[in-house]
Length: 251
Length: 266
View 1 (cartoon, each protein chain N blue to C red):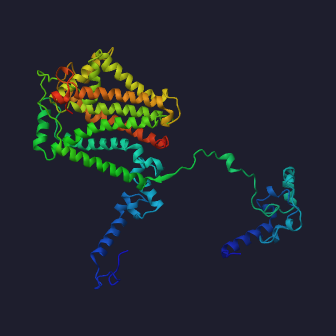
View 2 (view 1 turned 180 degrees about the vertical axis):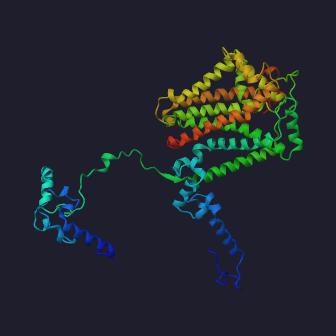
View 3 (view 1 turned 45 degrees about the vertical axis):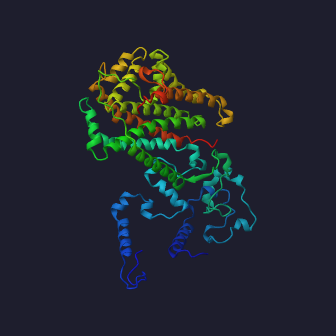
């Protein structure tokens, strides 16, 4: 045996003697019913010997435990209840549950990398490059500041910010309510509905030819309108050619 | 860890070197109460960093970054060719715009009498005023572009499909908010470009069916553009729309993680 601290040995000896003196005072009465007669007397069991039930070949029938439960108090009064089960165990095995029946593992192990450094370094470099680009660009290209606002002088042409020039371009073709509210409203609403109207579960481009074609059409529609509105519209918002008449465009 | 005098520090005379003293000061600072109050247990600023899987996890777990990133992501998610960094750069542009915008606010008064001359003064009389205004302007245009391209990227990857439908909807709202942010800022210089661009824009909104006139009145703070409009759009631009945008961005980033990280691989 490994070294057991002296005070623990002393305490266990005292406890055993106390139990030997007053057998019915122990807490092991409930599990002692079936094996009461097979167990050796509690007093001479020092915990290192093989239990007598194993030596003699007698195995306490587990089934006997249940019917004997009612008689247990009586048996405990007659024989000394052992501190251990019939086979010397201090615990009972209730049941064995295999992992698969209680754990439902849905996630498959995937190939993962640490965010630091693999993702953060990329993000850092990207943001640094963007900052550098912005600084250099802002050093050489000034933001426009035209003459102060004048309600009595309408510049010709008057243009909206570039991202609304597609709408302004539509204004030349449709009633303002259609061009300014209905069509952009349908556009935004259509975008919001995209995941709910596209029932195709695949993410592979080859399976989504229609969705990709439709969205590309949508992007091209706005891109062409914005480009026409930005570069090909001059005084009176009439059609011009930028290489012939110059640019009528401020960012 | 400081080497003691005569402990072979290499200078041969047994005196403590500058390096020894620096190490001692460093140890003292890292052991101080203030330092340990600031940095959490497990922070690499407490324990030091040597490259190991455990420390790589600690970098994220014991810092503010844990709000944005998990400890690990799918290997394909770090490929620049997949995301083109567009979402992250949009967020970064928003940060740049916030910083430069706060700078501009120190020199700008949103009244029709002062707005234009304040900007003129910013160009000529404020150190780096012109540069910061340029950065704000170009970053704003870039952000519209990058948010738009981010949306296109997400669509072409089919990343709006379940379970990410709701995050796509949040994204469309964020696109609209980005356009609003840019458009409300457009009026603030109070020059001819601003005035007439906004006139074109708000005239169009006036054609909203049923309550078009009311929409226009609320947006302009009157029947036509004036100093009330300027104040209104200023507050919308510097407080209201950014506030709403930040809330939606928080939901957007949170859902990216809750929906299982970014989509793919294809």
